[in-house]
Image 1 (cartoon, rainbow, N blue to C red):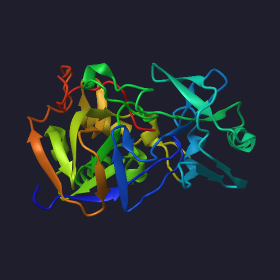
Image 2 (cartoon, one colour):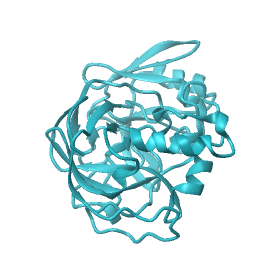
Image 3 (cartoon, rainbow, N blue to C red):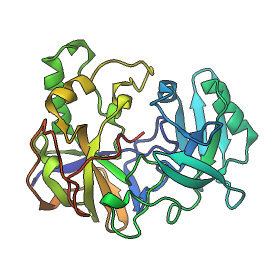
Image 4 (cartoon, rainbow, N blue to C red):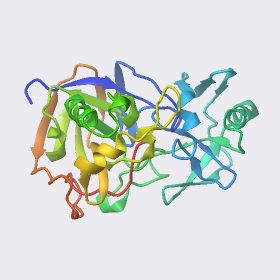
Amino acid sequence: MGTARLTSIHVHPVKSLRGLAPREAEVEPWGLAGDRRWALIDDKGRVVTQRQCPRLARAAAALLPGGGVRLSAPGLPDVEARVPGQGLTVTVQIFGDTVAAVPARESAAHAWARRWLGADVRLVHLDDPAVRRPVDPAYALPGETVSFADGYPLLLTATASLDALNSLVAQGDHPGEGPLPMDRFRPNVVVGGTGAWAEDGWERLAIGEVVFRVAKRCGRCVVTTTDQRTGERGREPLRTLGRHRSIGGRLVFGQNLVPLTRGTVRVGDPVTVLAAGTPPAQNADRESAPGAGTGAGVRRVGKG
């Protein structure tokens, strides 16, 4: 681990839309600053993701000063939405959680989203992530919260593990679908200079000046089969993960992190493992639920 470094950072201002790759990012208790503070909801208040609408992969969101967003997609004019501030909230459903969020004030932003998806959707903002949505209590410490990410503040992946996975894809039933890029997994932080699957055993680590605990391994979903440029779906990597990376009934790749300190992470920062345990057996049928702060267990899936 002496050469492990942070190789890239990824911020997705709107859940399931294409995001940004800044050279540095502020780490807040609920995730990277600006990450997944916005989402689209349907007419029943359910968050819309690439699981239901792979077309979202072709749309992009850029951050504006103050936390607003600029939305863009092929064939549509760009549209901007400012942070709505305090106002009437709506009830949002996301992976079993009920969360209050504030609709964008700009009607043009809602119209843009409806036109792109061809469905009755609205753009909403998570105004106060410090209180709105707790982390899954089975894997949380008291007071931990999260944005509109699937379940945890950050997702970490490793380049060596992707290389190993791509080698397995090349030997599988659908070699033409590989090699897969890292954007299929929609991480927040990508680490280089480790061994393949080394992150499986991590329990606590530092990226530069910021310390994180590992909440649990990340179970993967159909979003990983979605080409993030075209929105088209294939069979990989789920086919290969099912054969080689099944743990506790989930197909796993990457680790969910919760920040223990605030600070700024930068591309090139050293990555230091502060505590590690025994990696799980791959293709295991069962995996016991962890105590808070360990790396075991799988419940929520993906990152979106």
